[in-house]
Image 1 (tube, rainbow, N blue to C red):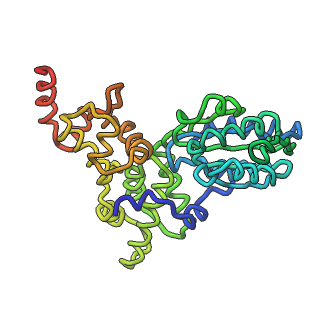
Image 2 (cartoon, rainbow, N blue to C red):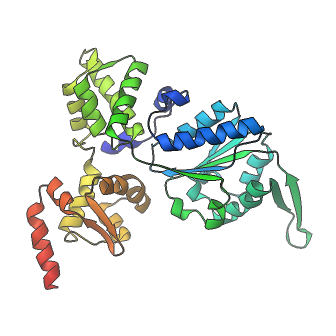
Image 3 (cartoon, one colour):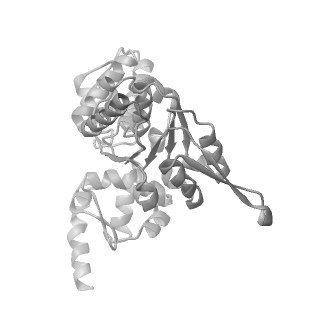
Length: 337
């Protein structure tokens, strides 16, 4: 049940998505640099340079693409890496772009290398090279593209090739949010959802949001549902605590799988180090899921350490699970080995 809190809810995301720069809370450095780029491009009457956003899921990469398109009054076309299966799919997208359009590609790290190569000339020279025919009748056709902007988003920038990364005019990292910013988001979105929320409830949900707006919004909507069922016109501390309990989420946002990962590292692998493949097999989770969803937040809280030899539970991880008595036992065992 707890995993559902992290899954996309398109209707909610669109309703709560910031509609203007002033509504976008957090990521101040990124916003400042983007505004400079946008204003300069508009003054020169040029298309904005290609942009790459990277960071954890739910931190605002797609929202920024929407805001950029709105700011420069551009047509935004959205796709994702998994949706572009063949070079022909990408060629079709590029060939249908008009001057000033923005093409947003989410999960860009999932593009295959052949498709990446099609992007090189399109991004750098605004030329689309098409290979037509088969074998002896093969010929290459060049198609000029109008000025356009490519915005890429990825949770794993290391999987993008160096030649592709180098073709972006600016690369921005989106970090986890501060609790104060999450609280502002919760209060603003509570107004959007036409529900009251107490200061204490806001604090509880913010701390449990994994420092991620998308998760905060999920918790807010589920809290509103519970308040409605219980006949309350406000999300109070009792409602927020009950929601966390229902979704098996602790006060710092750790859910069952987070705790399972730590417990397995401690119990089965004596605190680590353990490789990602072994950890994925032991937890029955996909490697990508561990690396993209659970591991970043565990590391942010200092509960998990990633070394060249593998993942290790930190002393804070032992304490969080009330297993600190095992830390010294495992340390002594490792020294004896």
